[in-house]
Amino acid sequence: MSNYDEQYLDIVEAILDHGWYGTNRTGINTYKLPHQIMQFDLEKEFPILTTKKVAFKTAVKEILWIYQQQSNDVRKLQEENVHIWDEWEKEDGTIGTSYGWVIKKFDQMDTLLKNLKEDPQNRRMMVNLWQIPYLDTGSLYPCCFLSMWDVTDGRLNCMLVQRSGDMGLGVPFNTTQYAVLVHLVAQATGYRPGLLTHVINNAHIYENQVDALKIQLSRRSQAYPAPALWINPEITDFYKFTINDIKLKGYKHHDKLTMEVAV
Image (cartoon, rainbow, N blue to C red):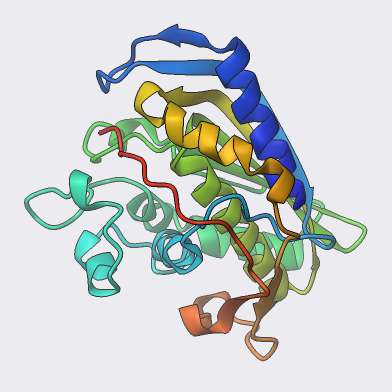
């Protein structure tokens, strides 16, 4: 079993067994637990679920759209057959002052890359999408809103803080795509990938996802080993990576589980 399957399914099981049932802004009730944490050593294993299929390329395209392209233009994703932001698209084709827009506005990625190269023991290295003046003019308050970065013993570590974690749909994407991001930033700055610590303030399961997640839990004993991540070793400029430079090798998985997005 992959380490991610083990940690993720433990949280899912705990929420279903002990989660608090209540309402939220979407109108679809959830079971939730606060302060759930997963941690992965990215030198040892790449975190992606095998107990269901995760759309790896879609997840990577989204993270590049946010952090590399620093875009808010939903149409760019649609051109690549990625439709995960369609429900939040504004009339101008964007998601407003959300995600990639905020990265670009405050030049956050260039600042991070510069500090990692020139001042790696800086304890202020973070990328923060929670910029209060621009929250209400974006389509959605950011869920994964803060990443904090650290260099220890030649390894690049990242703590991802997520205010709201949809365990059925969002979290599997988020862990995997931020693991890719750590690998890309590490290669671009000359470090080995280190720890990815994923902190979820509100980890929840929508009541219309319960049946699908019970199916996934039933696959626990048939989980597969984790695949390997391949990144083109010739690319050392963070802004030059393309989707073709990032691949999984040996990704064995169970079938996709269909769940509805709560808007």
